[in-house]
Image 1 (cartoon, each protein chain N blue to C red):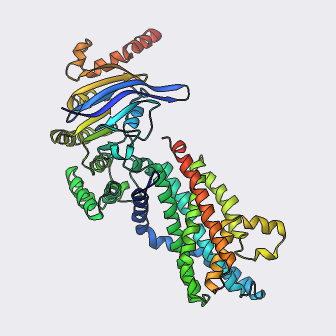
Image 2: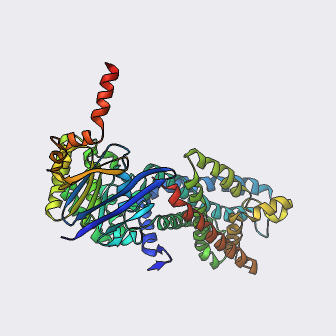
Image 3: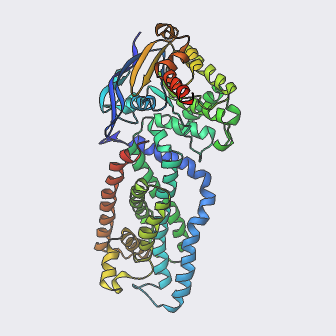
Length: 253
Length: 257
């Protein structure tokens, strides 16, 4: 199976601060990879270097063998991005937000409208296509952002904490749509704070902390490899949460 | 099709996106964009004009009306590239969202400035129609006025975007309007002829892009084009090109989300 994404020794420095310290991994076509890590660990920065809104200080990212730094325009044609914030245009309604993104991929007005209608149906928002953004609930907004990320039929979808802040029903609806995409062969790169989300969606997992990979492996095997019961326990243990808890207990007495 | 690293398609998509947003608001945009120049037209043209004779070979009402055509274009372009652009950049983060697709930030900036030019052309031309109804236009050359408005509006689009990208908060945009745009509005041949005032004011006014736009529009409307008119046109185009470089250079550093 060919690699859709190759991340080779990427580093990101902001002045004296190194946000990402030489991270490398690969993602095969049709597979899903989760990046797990505490706030400030470098997850979002890593994703930004992959979807080319920031450039690596060193190292290389390729999508379908296209160097993202050399040819971001072409690389971005293969991906869809769901960012941490919704970033919807409040001056446009639901379907207009979809069309506005679709035309960036040189789609005709008619094709963009048609594609938008199909995808709104996919995420269960076809009855809301004329609604203004402020009329949508948090869950609806996230589903709209997912639909928007699919307008170019991406081979790889990148999701940065896609279900943070959603209620349980909305999370399940969101996961269900991602599972359908997985069955269609779409590769998924996701960051998350939720163990259950990762266990459900990701074939492989990377745990990063302080800008570097501290553990990686197959999602179902990683906890036992490191001597933990599940992903969440492994994440907490490997990122030092247990030690911090002990310190607090000692302090409190 | 590519121009250096800029894609014409990318620039066009930015204009398309702004048009999608603008077409919903066009009806409610007309009043605020035309109220201000009409107010000045009544106060200066009809009010003060009653006491003033001909200026630069034309009635004062004609002089002020044609100055206000250019000023209306400038103000519309300025609003688009400051307040509206600020919302897109800092609040909705539209530029950042678009940048996840196959369009770069430089194309977004150029598209936004051109859109400011188009908006300036729309409202400047609407005010031009007001002057047409007043019987002020005397030459078919007035058909070229929208081109001057487009160049002027795009120039102010780049200027406004530069300040918007540099502004730490929205309040700083008020300083730009108050210290740069408002003085240009007043001292750019709009309400009185610069050639008749004290030299230092005349020299300062020469540097205002609006001065050259106003001169061109008056000459087109009255059919009195001269060789100097082409110098004014060239001045506007050159300044527009120079000003286009700055926001394209700073946008990546300023939009480090």
